[in-house]
Amino acid sequence: MRGKAAPPEPALGVIGGSGLYEIDGLEDVRWARLTTPFGAPSDAYCTGRLGGRRVVFLARHGRGHRHTPSELNFRANVHGLKQLGVHAIISISAVGSMKEEIQPQDLVLPDQFYDLTRRRVSSFFGDGIVAHVGMAHPVCEALGDVLEKAARSAGTRVHRGGTYLCIEGPQFSTQGESLVHRQWGVSVIGMTNMPEAKLAREAEMCYATLALATDYDVWHPDHDAVTVEGVVANLTQNVARARDVLRRAVPTAGDECRTGCRTALKTAIITRPEAIPAAARRRLALLLERHHPAPRRGRRRG
Image (cartoon, rainbow, N blue to C red; front, side):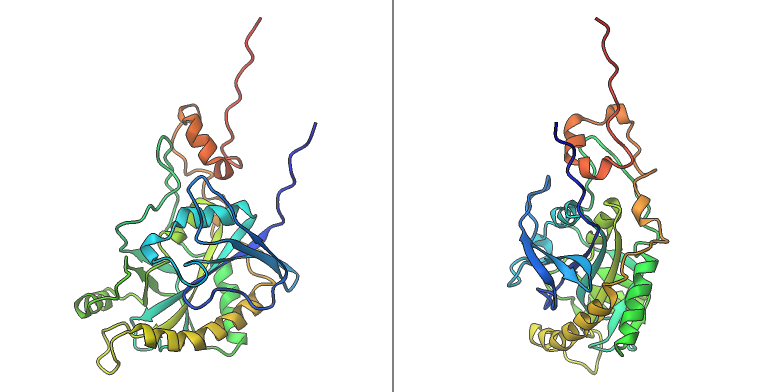
């Protein structure tokens, strides 16, 4: 009788945003096109080794940038990473700056999110099973430490902390919206890190964002309104910096967790085990098997 297949070697996941569609320096490169209980991910996953570390990369918008933020299948993207043994995710994201001191081409490591999206499914759970994971601290502190150290060693201007405001898009903000968002005290604005961060927590993976500031949104009186051309111009510079930061961060990223990311489901599921439908158990098997295995049925007497 065959035994269970060995679990994949723990890996670091990298989700590439606008402008970052591959990782330089990967060795032993292989491509994996997966199916998930939640549909198809944005693209095939690129797996390889960098600095001796197993890395799994996904182009969030697909190679060639084919999917709008609202079209992304966030659940499939995160579930696919989990299938491939990823235990920590570095999310690369182009953002607009909402603060004077965060200049275009700076890097930002936000530690909070504010979700203004309206059209996205934000949980793996539902349809017979309920879970409430804690999101007070959505970013893994230890993973943030690694990224900050890597950015500073690369000589890059980096800002640690702050709130990432996620809007639906795909349009950029109106000036009225931008000015209101400024009053809220957020640091950067983007379109992709929610519900990505929520799903990573439900999947018990560490998560941190490396945000690439490309513009001042539309609030700054001394800068032109944000345009695709301007974003792409600054992205070219920022992506080169991000690649350098990744190269320095990968060897130790995800080695530890102090935020409880990897035990998030231990006490989060409120549905009684015997009340969970079989279909929900099958759909969520990868997430449930560690803390909430299916109850054993007693043997019938003959």
